[in-house]
Length: 334
Image (cartoon, rainbow, N blue to C red):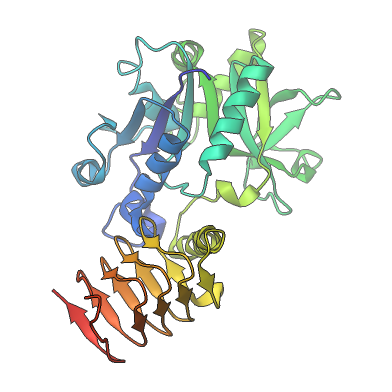
């Protein structure tokens, strides 16, 4: 498989979050939003991974792994401008480059691998990740010809009544051929109400010059969910809860009520352990086999030996002894 670079745009403030914290630093299932994006492209084996930071850039940089390349966008002049800040970092790179966002945490790594396979098969200069929405209001629509080839993208505000009936939308995530991307970034202008450089503006000149732009349709439109406010953050949390619970069920863990059981990333749970309703298993917790956890337990950085039984208990950053008896309503910490 071809070498693929990844650019993650994470420079914005996210004013709709109504928070003093940069949007991409808000936690989701035990990870910051931006680190979900990093994790997903890393699991797809895309490298190098470049994160473009801006608002609270030092704080964002502090939560990233050392092998992530950080590029600063000093002025937030649009998505095209943000991507162009990566020009020097990718000057010697001549393969496909993914462009995605630090506030889209739900893309699966296998989706990114399928996107790459599709992009290479289509021999495209650019591949747009698209999705079908029942209500596409506000999104750019994908225009295709009678042979299903992509003709371009029309923004909602510019779409005709007929075009607004189109349910295939542009998610804003792309795969480009790197050299072509940076060539066409030099041709876009901030000729819009916001006076910003928009990444989708590279598509019309690509098409005009005869390059192919493909459209990769998501099997699960929920993967493209972007987090703009607290409501969407809760929606994403619920989607990840279901995914993570299913992951552990497939590995031999009984979860009595997945809808009321919250498990964060980077936990370990042994076979034949039973989780009762109301449990919160937080990052760093390790639970052995044949345990009974809950109802209503919170474990954070806890180590629970095989065979343990906990009810209505909180264990934080503590190892429970093999023969230790944990009474209901206990709070155990270092």
